[in-house]
Length: 159
Length: 334
Image (tube, rainbow over all chains, first blue to last red; front, side, top):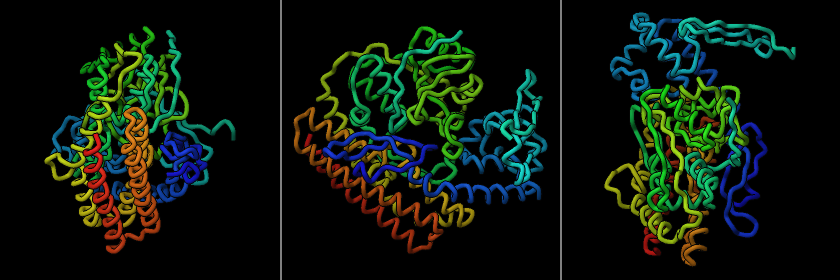
């Protein structure tokens, strides 16, 4: 690839690419990601649709929050089972609401750590109204008690 | 206590080669990322179907960790390595090394690198970073994928180093302890090329090397039967572009970086044939990039009917034919 054919102006995602330079030598240059520059909107469009669909299934008691986050974060079943320390067969049971409600707090804490979410997010989804999304901010504060999180909700300072 | 090591941060195409190259440079050995990649026979292909992945996927480089091990062996560089079951001990060891002023590489789950953009962060246990300081209770990170030095909380680093799961990092850290200032690279380059040819052509496994490219070409036609809906298929098809271009490959699934390696190798070995092969590999890379563009375009347009997937499959199959010829020719030149 010629250097002049590479450059994409996309500051949020930069990467190193190896190209042919004007003097015919090959070497590294930094450019924005063409895929993200052209198609990030489409990525979020699909993601929002998936989130909505999974949320409806959650509310309809068809799936558990474990399945919801696993699907959104694209973790393989074998990988997730190994991270939690259960068999794949047992993990698949955790996808069903009736088994999820029997899980111990210890296991729920493990899921929260893996998904990098506050433990409460496995039991409730907080959605900010579309018109307020730019203004509202959340701060999750861990305490010495692993099962107790303080959530601060406020208006962003620059508003 | 704060300690920040004077370490030059540079972006690199790939995390494993970037991290290792930066550590070798810091320790006085001037070597480029493509030479590290090529000497360690990093170039590869594999089509993988496993419950460890949410969907069938492919890899374009050798097994994580192999680059480090091959470089250590072929350049006779001694690495000090640690793994820990106990996170507290592992954290204490890392902190001790930083306070001693030793930049240290760590294996982490990329998902927890919270300084990266949201859309890039996926659970993958084989990301490598250099840790170059501790400041105000946070680690200072030199990550090849990020334009500047970054910070990560100790809590997040612990999650990332002991993420568990497939290819779990187990708190793995390493640093070079014995690095010669100059090394004769001729023999290691030849070994790296020979091994790369063997891995691409001769491994007796039906889903790796050139056979892996053919398998990918065949299997992609079955993807519509594995997805939830059209948007899921579009997402997976567009991920081909990410895996080839954006997930730390230097473009075209490492083929551009390998072309650069061959050009540098031609200079070192004074071998004109390798310079020609370098150009051929650049052409092959350009054609892989065409696949990336094509996949992104049909994914965005949801133009994912049988005909289009057959077209994509044919493009991939052609790359298999070209790489088979390329590596057969390359094998004869060293």
